[in-house]
Image (cartoon, rainbow, N blue to C red; front, side, top):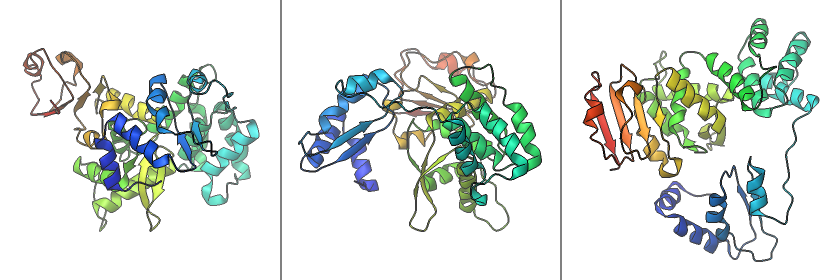
Length: 341
């Protein structure tokens, strides 16, 4: 089932019960396969499970999660399928596909030894392999050794391994792509966004600079294509002409964009409430400034804001404390946006 933009807007206006009832009504006479990707909470499954009628006709619901307890909770009778790590050769094959797409996924002999050393440091983690391969695909062979030396994970455990290599890929982005990537942190987790809208937002924020006779839209699509080639953004759908229609960002890369944006004083999000956000809401946030999302009783202290803050957006707030107690201390603040309440 593919929904039009009008259908999606209508769905966004429904509450959870209305959405569930509409899905159930649509599926009740059909044989279906539904995939629910990346479920994190028991409550999420509880809210959705009644939407899928059991008509004993072979219909199936596939659920993916990083938490085994969620899988066992959703179906106590079935043993969850646990994905294994890639082996060494599978890791190498994946690396070659991403690092040498123009060479038929074949690594030049002079780079194979170094390439295998880099893949070994990725510890058979597919996301790490894909991202580092995307980085190296844009590098000259003489630069590979420097990248290999930068991957120092041997004694790092758990998710810190991935965070390390993702950070390396961000640091190696050209300067003109860094603000475009940092901007991705404003979108809700697992959100699919239209390429055209994203490029319009990049242009409005001043991230795109004209190059010769190219329009800003053409420059934007070129930036987006490069981020996709580097595997920093994932292509979801192509247009009828073969161009980029919609994209998404992996949640770990989104976390990276938020943390790097905070470190660079580019953007910071406090107390995020993803469930309360829509795509259109996210697109209204002011970048180069501050976006505060969620419901706090009071604002953070003025010392927690960047010293050169000029614009502040407050979203979905119910403030009991007088906000001027903080805002009057932000000497360079010129624009304050109050959205939703």
